[in-house]
Image (cartoon, rainbow, N blue to C red; front, top):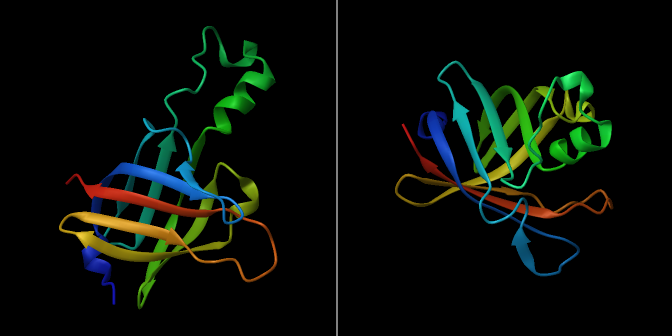
Amino acid sequence: MIGMQELVGHWRLVSFIEQHAGGPWSDALGPDAKGCISYWPTGHMQVLIGALDRPRFRGEWDSIPSADKARCLDRMVAYAGRFSVAEDRVLHHVDVCWIPNWEGRDLVRLASFPSPNRLLLRTEVPTDGRARPMQEVLWERAA
């Protein structure tokens, strides 16, 4: 059973791996991805993960080609909202997201603490017939 107070704080990314259709596990955004997740006592949360190979831009945002912007967004994860805890699950109630289709959804993560100051969040096995990768994100407490 996970308690809300155990989650509260700021966590830095250790690893983000995924598995497609039962294949091998691999780094979702590369081995050097960086990111953080924060949980507040008020029940709010936010997460931001970015691959280090995202394109660097020069000039004004409006002058950046759309294809370059899309490559950048494809190599990151960003959302925020509220969170709640139910047994061994953390529910992220998404208010704003880099993928607008996720707004208003609950993202369910199986949560565990594999060692002191480490938090592992895993996706559940899909049961709706849709092909989605399994993901495991390991975080280390930063503050």
